[in-house]
Length: 93
Image 1 (tube, rainbow, N blue to C red):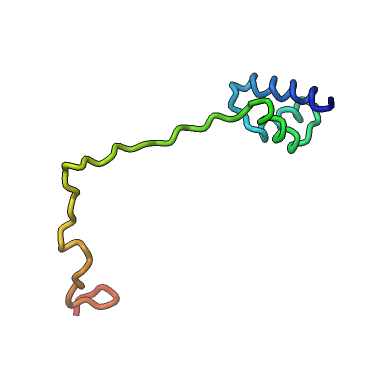
Image 2: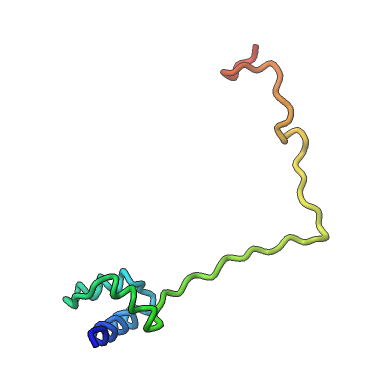
């Protein structure tokens, strides 16, 4: 069929580049090598071949300990109290 040639080329380019190229980079590399393939064809064929980019694992933080209390901000820094004797420009009156 017409997709067999591009499938071999896509698999070759993807394998030569440490299996990290996505469809866009595979398409660009194929065009550099004068193998004219439509980008939409590369995007369609890569999942069919089982070729996909490895994604980074989600960064997981340490869950908070249920026995320790959370840090409570002091009242003076909570922003509830307006400063006295201040004007809009910052100079004292």
